[in-house]
Image (cartoon, rainbow, N blue to C red; front, top):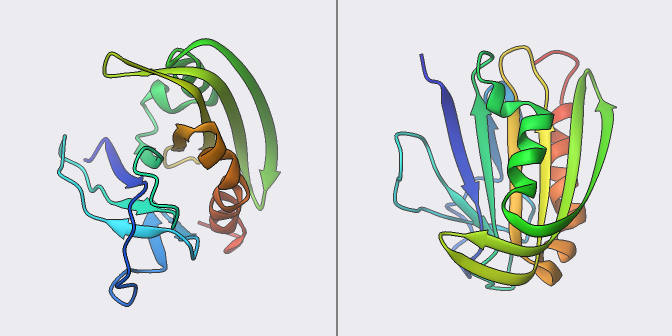
Length: 171
């Protein structure tokens, strides 16, 4: 049994839109790709499906990562995800907002500050996170990059998450 499936959504300019899907599935959820985001294949780091989506600003430092955790994996909980995301920042400022959309609880997280990734500090960064709770395993999504890019994509990010939860009554 697969422990997780990963989809990465991120940033690069791409003009050939016809070959890129507008919808994609993760577990039983169908997500709608924001129209201004593009798919870009990336090299696999671990055995999982990975794709990159990007906004048209060509900001290669902004990306979105989506992971489907198995039901037995505590790393996919809202509390564990929030703690992990806060630990990626030096002196983070964070906010959480939990709500029910359709039949699922989703926790949105916002973190700002100096981001640390692969021993590199990046100031004035932000992270948008979402944890969709589901009996088949949680879907954990994060977008991280320069604060201006992340803030500019906030409404598209939230709509992408919420659209999958409004699709039907059962998943």
